[in-house]
Length: 103
Image 1: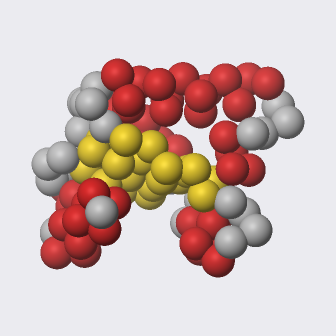
Image 2: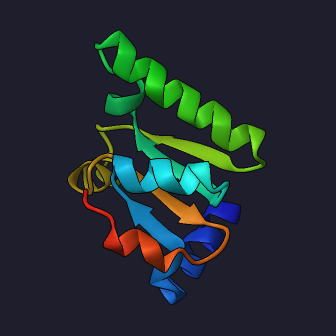
């Protein structure tokens, strides 16, 4: 139920959502992530350093009181997320400055 509420909040205010590794990383540094959305392809990446990066990101989000959802690449929701770079976040507060960052 909280994922639905978080998604609705991001739809109502687009500055409360971010997409892509760099934007998500900056939002996490600001403790802004309420809900992290990530594909299983990123989370279970064959490259150990990449996998570790995303495992640590999920742990950081959870330690800051957020939640993380891993989407299967075999499901339509995971396919859609993969088209948006494989990672996104619903933010606790608006961060319009993320739009100015280079991807």
